[in-house]
Image 1 (tube, helix red, strand yellow):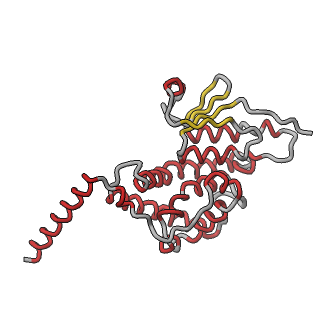
Image 2: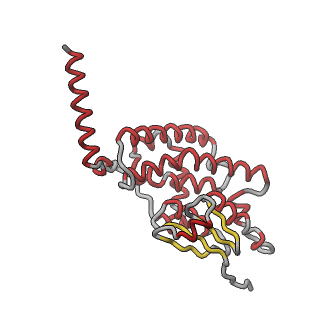
Image 3: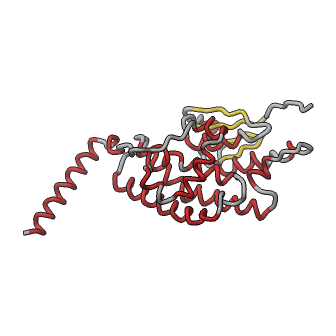
Amino acid sequence: MVTVETSNEILFCLENNTITKYIELVTMFLPLPPIIVKLKSIPKELLEKSQTKNLPLLQSGDDFISGTIPIIKYLIKSSKDIFDGINFNYREILYGKNIKEETKVDMWINFIFSKIFPITLELENQLYGKSEFDIRIFEYKLNDLLEILVEINEYLKLRTFLTSNHIQLCDIMLTCALHICYNDLFTKNEWELIPNVIRLFKFVSNLGFYKEVFGSSIPCKKVKKAEMYITPNNKEVKKENEQKKNKETKKAHK
């Protein structure tokens, strides 16, 4: 008989936040997940405890850990001791059995969080009006993202997953980062350029634990019109630029 314990760790996150979903997904693998407290804003007392001056923030006893990647690594790696004597070890499943496997997973996680996630977050913020919409930045970021995914697609040509013959943490994180792309940004034309990436995405996103946090993934048939979020000032600037461009075109043809 296994005694059910309760966690003494508390995870403070912002509600309706993509990063919160990343960590929430990881906690589903833990035998003793932290208590998750979702906040609308960051209280001053928590801000003082956070080394990054932001959320998420994990309280473990008298210690505080801030930053998405450090929190995720801590939660997974500290779970090993809890599983001593039990035949299932999520640390080995998600992070590997040795330092070499862990390093490969870390390599991909760092790549995803430094190269892919900042782009998808920018696109998400612009698409849903969380930041000022700029069509030039939006299209530039979208092209950058597709170029990165084409490279990953080539890497996955002879591989099912990024680092192993089974799903690991980096595969889950890549799927999380691409959730908005599948649902709102990329249509069939883009996905046809990266079939190996979409194969990995579909596998992970159809798993029960993923759906529980992110919901079902519905392929985008028509890209949402991000222009609807252009502010009145942006509309005027866009109109002026178009008029200026038309005048320059007329001069060139004279």
